[in-house]
Image 1 (cartoon, rainbow, N blue to C red):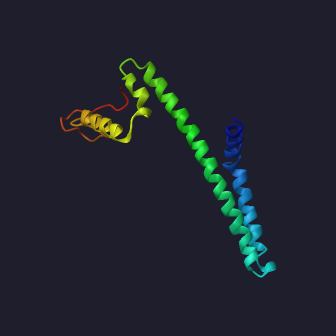
Image 2: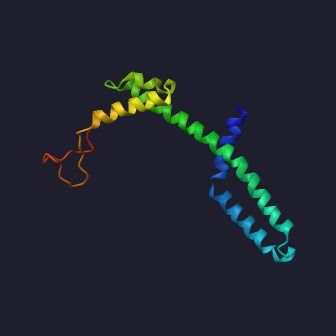
Amino acid sequence: MKFAKVSQKLALWAGSPRTFLLAIVLIVAWALTGPLFDFNDTWQLIVNTSTTIITFLMVFLIQNTQNRDTDILHLKIDELLRVTKDAQNAMLGLEALDLMQLEALRKQYRSLGEGESIVLEGTPAADGQQQDLNQC
């Protein structure tokens, strides 16, 4: 749990405008010191190494926050399915299906929508009626 709390705080910090500004200031400072060090290999190695390390660590931080956000989104959708009268509660357990089963289910839902048409802003439907997309 400590990792989750630390990664949440780091993600908020890393995504802030202040941190972006700090990164720009550091890069400008590094660039301005180039003539002082005659643009030598060590000068270049400093920025290459530091950006590589930061990028490597950020990959794990981003993945952690993405996993958390996905879990939260799934829980919210699960709750909506649970309370919706006409929803198929079997959809709550899709995580247990393998890729082939998910693809079969996707095809089934596609076939349910075949022949259905929607009208986008003033475009007449095939049958001459317009469908209001704001109504369920």
